[in-house]
Length: 494
Ligand code: ADP
Image 1: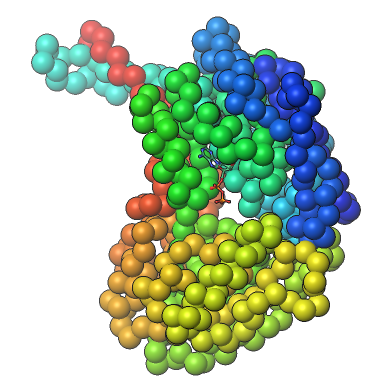
Image 2 (image 1 turned 135 degrees about the horizontal axis):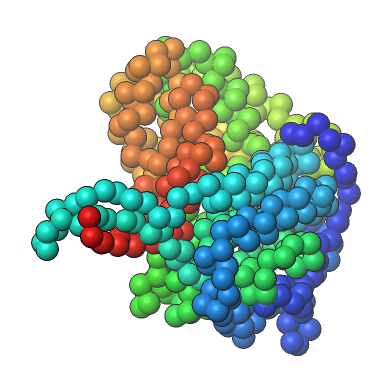
């Protein structure tokens, strides 16, 4: 969290999309409502973009890529993204209020939603400016004798960015700024529950930067078909997406006929292996808090906790003691850690999965329903389920709620097998008094990242993404920047 004075209170964002440099409403004037999940109140509206709006935005991005010098003028991109960084810093408190309003994220937890992504803009501007777009790899043997090989890194082209509602401002930045700095043009399609984190970004780009018309477009809509139109459009070269695995599959299928490049960060069902020698009082309260922070609406959270049978009840008691005392309630209130779920639908989905867990034999230690003291707002009690069957629906499906599933195990080998028993492979965690033991286990997990003894894997300079059905490709780090570039090998005389 920052040390600045944060502003509180519901705030509606801009209603308009950004297409080809113009902030605009859809032609019919249709709007859709935006609801604050903490009060169930309609706070304002956003323009309800159509497939025709999306087609215009893609056309603008195509033209900007093909006909302006954006793709090959690094210094100009650096100038524009530095302006964007400065403008976002100026607008930071407004963005924070909009994020809390539309996501329901507690204001005290907005550091990763708002402050860190703004700093990422600066990072990518500087990274992309220093990047060597023409790499000399030396002399190589070829079928036609020796040749010097150069690799030229070209931008991929028009990038469609489709983002979800859980960390909308962060993901709008994460999915658009590195591609822009790499020389691509972008069409952003934010989620319908959180349109303003996208429209505000569009407004700031249009009003406070020199980013040329068509380079960055934002199309908001209440209809999934508008995102589907982006993922199928033949003029789009690449889709970057964060969201559910089911939607990821649909986007990949839509892009297949034109062989689009794809960067996908999908669902997760990560496991935290707690070894029998671990310091339970250090790792378990943190695990319980993480499960409830952001109301469990994060794909990387370890939502399965694997406890050694020899210390099972001791571990459950520590988790329960923390979950019983999670400060939950109005996201604007000081000290609140857990806010509401994003919507009624999402809350019902979480409650349904809890019920399915109970039906398959899980024991409810804490929670299991909605809090009586918060009748308004889409709240779910912090919920601790013990004796969860590792093959049951609640242990296999992503819940996206404040629910921890505890599974007992006997040996490290058992724990590794249970952790890997998932279609997902996004992240994981290992806690042990012995770092080498934890590292050995971490290496056996089929996931894109692992936290060992509370040292987070997540940072702008290290690759982040999933294995198996958790995704394709990686964001962040040098590798993440190169995802938005094509490698062209050039042979020339030695
Ligand atoms: P949820 O996490 O609620 O299941 P999704 O993963 O479906 O959400 O949604 C993430 C983003 O994908 C949102 O911007 C949504 O509008 C968009 N989306 C949903 N369906 C499709 C689709 N078929 N094609 C492209 N984008 C879609």
